[in-house]
Image (cartoon, rainbow, N blue to C red; front, side):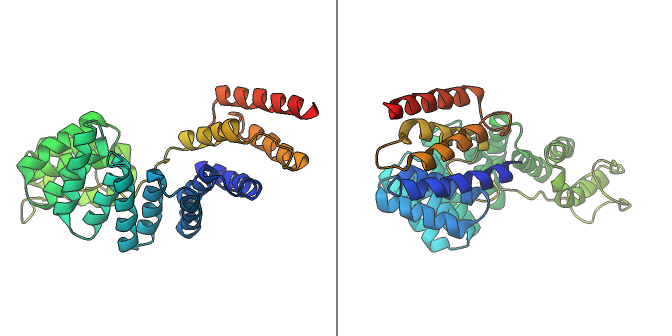
Length: 313
């Protein structure tokens, strides 16, 4: 559902950047929309245009880094994240994405430094705890990792990756009953993890001398004990994250942008902007877009009526 709404939003945003080509925030929103549709090349073009208009926006530099990172251009991704952090050293999204970039190229110590930096800024940033747990598990430091893993699920109990990491930590420490509970919780939250988690559960259940349950595995379970102690496989947060990831936030930000910026002026074609505004107000209504709010729709309608009255004068 969200992808279809992003596609429609792009249609309107493309029209708006033609009318307001020097509006940095609209270019940035357009880049975010393309980024959420995995069209990173078009996203890069939008973010670069926004940065031409305002080179001091740390969030846009972070989003540009995300787009480059998604394309596998590690050098440009790191450069963009570092620029974002020069502008705003408190940018937790920049630190998180920089850490993911370093983790992806195997530089675990630098990744850890990035995520530890986040915790100096915001102790409730759940992804940092999840990623630190995964990093220390990868280094074989399970005793240190388990504290981060437990904090991660405490902060975000709906994150399957956090439960996978906690399960891996318990498995490595031979706390097999606890490991099974964690892995099952991860499967409950994300059944698509079955292919990676099922073999681990089979080994654990075999080690405990029990047959795997139907909910844990697909097909027939192997008989007997495993040849070695089961090892957990840690997971960092998958992929990079844009500054606006939540579709609710994106569509409400789009509506707020209309309220702040898009007032009809004598230099703008009245019929064209009126048509776009009408379409957007309808699009941002909860009846047609589940990610919009009634309060925002009310504000947009009120603003639109006011603009029409002013225009008639």
